[in-house]
Length: 162
Image (cartoon, rainbow, N blue to C red):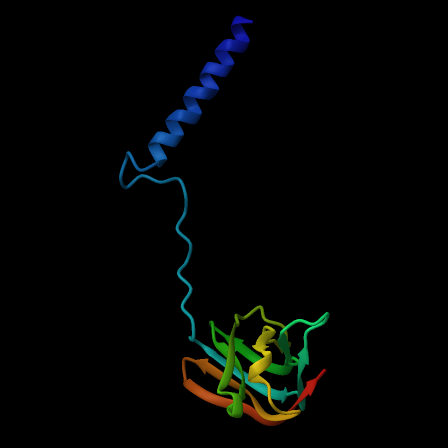
């Protein structure tokens, strides 16, 4: 029993000592390594092909819900090179509704050659939707060390379902 208590006491002493030494009580001493800072929109990205959807839908919610749900299919891009940490921006707008949704996709050299850009679903109140069809625009834009540039833009038909 005395040996077990001694081991527990030593382990406790080591844990408390390490905690105090690496904690805020001793400034400048840490056992953790600092992560490398991530610098966004650096390097370059070369997009060789972009496939944008032709349609999107706004669908009435099920079971009498008072909302409509927007669904924009993903865009797919083919990348021939990625250096550093560039960004691709997927954007969708419906001017008649004053609506814009943008999603930033952060890339790195490990990004696959074919990359899918997605947008989160969104909702509209029933009183906002007054037509059976709207005109929308999808676009992909790159942001990297060379600046900002359009990659692809397409007009889409937004069908209202339900």
